[in-house]
Image (cartoon, rainbow, N blue to C red; front, side, top):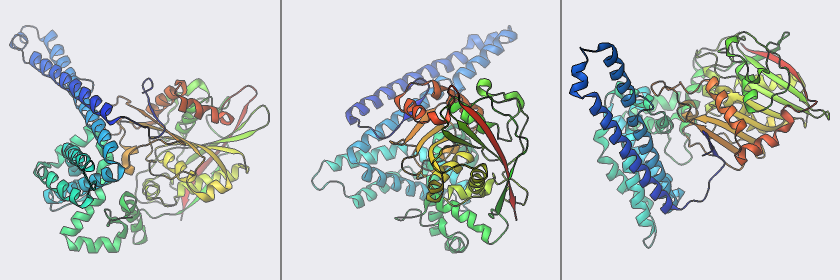
Length: 531
C-alpha cells in the first residue's frame, strides 16, 4: 500500500502462516465493525429518539437521516464490515494458494465456476445470458466460503503421500458446492442490485458466463445446435484450450457475417486542420498525458479545465478524435505521445460516417480481433510521420486503453513503430499479451466494473505496473468510478507517489515529458467508418 494507491508489480513471496494470521485479524475487525453497525441501528430505534420526533421534527429528521447514512452509506460500518470480510476471505484464499500451488488452486476455481453455472441453469431453466450473469454474481458470492473449504481440503491432502488427486478433488468439490446450490437466488432484480453493490464480483461473473452457456447448452440441445452454427466460439469454455470470454465476444462479433449487427467496416482518417485545446508545453507526467486523452472524449466540456493548465480552453470535440503529440527535447531527440479516448457510441449498427469508437470495437477488441479504432490509430501515426526508432507512448481510457494495449501486443505494429510505453485507465487489459520490453502502467479503480470485463485477475509483472485505488464512488452505480475525471485524480496521485515502480516508470519515460528546452507539436485526426 502506498498512500491511497496500491501498486502491484508482480508476484511476491509470502508466508502462508502470516497470511492466515492477517485473515484472522481482518475477521476480527469486521466483527467489530458489525458490532458498531448494530449499535448505530439500536440508536436509531431508541424509543426516546422516536418519541421526540413529533416534538422536535426540525432536529429529529436530520438526526435520523444522519443515522441512516452512517448505518447504510458506503462509508458506514456495515459496508466497511462487508469490505473487510471480503478482504479477509481473499487473504485466506491467497494463503491456501501458496500451500496447494497454482495448479490445484486453479482447478478448484474451475470446479467452482462449473458448479455455479449448473446452479444458475437449474435456477433459471428459461435462461437468458443476462439473467444467468446476474444469478452467477449471487452464486459466486455465496460459494466463496465453500471454495475456501475445498482449498483447505486440498491443502490437507497435499501433505499426504501421493499429494493431491485432482479427480478426487473435483468429486469432493462438487459435493461441497452441492450443499449451497439451493441458496442461489431466483430474484433477478435482487441479484442485479447485489452485483451493483459488489463490483469486485463482475470479473467472476464474466469468467463464469461461458460455463453458463455450456451448462445451458447441455440442458437444451436445441440451444447448443443453434450456438454451434451462429456462435461456434461460445461453447467449450471449460475444455482445455477453450475460448472462454474471448470466445463469447468473438461469437457475438461473428454475427456480423449474417446480419448488420456488429459488422466491421473500413475506416478513414482525416487530419483536423484547426486542432483544439493546443498545449503550451509537453506533458509533465501521467496525469497530463491522460488529460490529453480526456480532451478527445465526447464527454469533455470546457468547464472541466485542464490538469496543470497545460491545454488551452476548448469545447467538446467531434467523435472519433485521435491526438498525437510530438515532443522534441533540447538535444533534438523526438518522442511521440498517442492519445486515444474511450467508447463514444453504443449502437450495435456501425454506419458510414459514424465513429469507430463504438460497441463493435469494444466486442472485437475483447475478442482479440482487429478493430477499426486500432486501424485508425495506426493510420494517424503514419500520417503524422512517426519515424522508425522514435519512442512512442500509447495512452487510452476505457476502450482507448484496450485499443492501445492491443496495438502494443500486435507484432506488425511493434515492428513498424518503437512502442516503448503504454498507459491505460479503466481498461480490461489483464489478458492482453503486450510485447516484451514494453513498459505498461495500468490504472484501475476497485469499484470500476469495466477493467473486470476481461474475466481475469488483475496482476502486475516485471514490465507491468498495476495501480489500484478505491475512488469512493457511489456503490449503487457500477460506472461511478469509471469516468476519466476520477482516473485523472488517480494519475495525479501516481505522479506524486514515490513507489519504486512508479518512479522507474516515470524515469524510463523522460523522453515523453516536459524538460528545459523541450517543445511540443500537435497532430489531430478524426476517424470515421466507411462502407
